[in-house]
Length: 70
Image 1: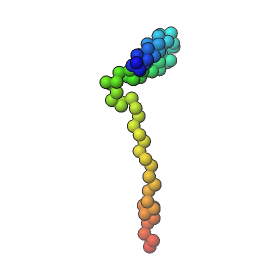
Image 2: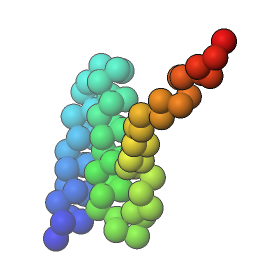
Image 3: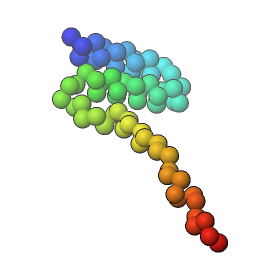
Image 4: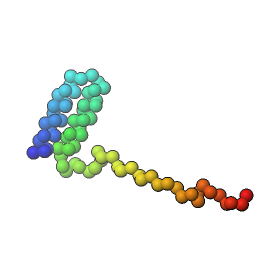
């Protein structure tokens, strides 16, 4: 049922894209592709998802402090 929902959305977005300016058309067609990917569970490879950011760590103070004797 979810597959049919996303396929329907993709069709509606493509219909709107036919009447839009070139910039909007490109963005709408990209959106339709994402809806199509969601409608096909076999193609869910995670390629459309962004990877998690690398956690930030604070560097140890030993990097910044040099030998106490100059």
